[in-house]
Length: 162
Image (tube, rainbow, N blue to C red; front, side, top):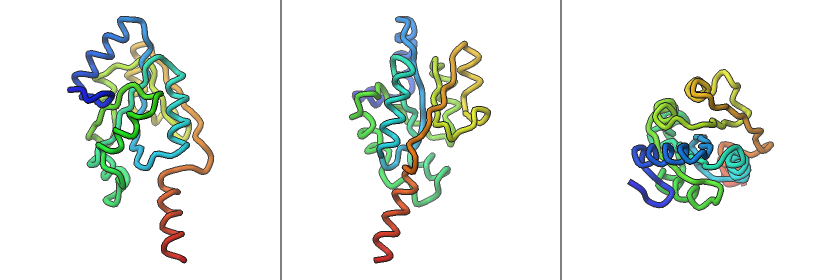
């Protein structure tokens, strides 16, 4: 199934294989991307520069709740996916339900795995899968002082304390 850049696992697997046959480097990153902010945009632009095609594994609403708690996500998965699809640096978005993208990474076999530098390399999920096939892992520095959690906290602070 394909709805523009937002695709299902099976459709994307065929695309990844076709891209790789053409010699294109497929970059994979993942996240919740709950309230898109400048840190996300800069991170995704840098991730795209690591290869030729950028895939985002987007945590489903159920997955976000498992990771962040019952009050998250703020934005439903379909809307989060559509906002990400509007970014020119993003080639495909695929939604996954698990707390980690390991099964998705194993299924897709990307060439380059990208995570934020806040993740120690030994804790990057899927690292072994990508390295085993001769790929590489890249950690990208995050924008200072910008996070969805901080944005939510600031909104609460401003609108509950006057």
